[in-house]
Length: 448
Image: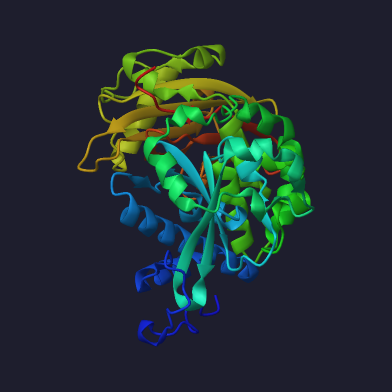
């Protein structure tokens, strides 16, 4: 980013005489944080607005702290502090003050008669606030002014005054705002949060994504240029699916940071992780299969004990004992508390067998983690096709993609992944000619 702070004068040289008495002075830390966050935005033209949004957040936090000590501010889920959201939402949404949601609209000038609202903070319940707050950022003077506010209810009453622009923003006259911000503090302190009703978040977000997934697979790669906005490429329904699934928005943000054409394999995996029901491997530890696993003909393996010796292979359980013994010889220990299951699958008419073994990890980390060991073989440990591949993905990317080891005599492929209890894994098996089978995601939930 071009150095945003290079033209900022030291505080001792600033003239404060013509600043409004209500102006909030921004600290060097505020300036540095804003510059650091805006540096992460791939489009340099967007960086300036993100910079102003960050300064608006700092000013608003200071303003509330100085004038209403009883109010608590929570910015943990604030959009400007989540880079992918900051890249696509021109505002500071999901800021909490007490029980109220606040959205800051930052501007470097109040000379315009109209104020632009991102459609996201007007039409998507995930981002709609109780109050919209207009913040004037006087960047050259290292200050900001909490200028005016508007409740969501008042915005609805003025809907006839709004107009949706081609850039995906609504516009509202600045005269529609209440220019007495002290009244906002009064509402935040004394008003019941139920007095301003917000729309409920729909429960069918995954269904919307499933409906438009094929369109997104085709259209999202067109957003590779940092200059492209979602509204340039997507319909509102398609954009809604992206905005309401953070993993998809992160994919687009990562795409715009890269200088090479994207591979759509992970995008397909990601959409399946979001939309498809998951097999709950956590139930295996209680010697149970959930309904999905039962419907897919998964079969639980017995509790694990070291194999006593090589016996004629008569069952999948005995086949697994052989494999587990070989893995232990390589240093991969399977805890006795681990539980697993297997499923027979067909790929282009070729019979295959997938073993999945899970256990939870106990360590010094406060995070609760689980392990998933995957073993792809064939019944009776017969040979796998030479060009077969095993791929494992989670919400962040492709974790592993491997084939048969030409230097070994293994009749199987194995990999092990670790994740937090809220993470899921997607497993696919493919041949070089593009034939592929994908299993439903694996999840880990001991509570259900």
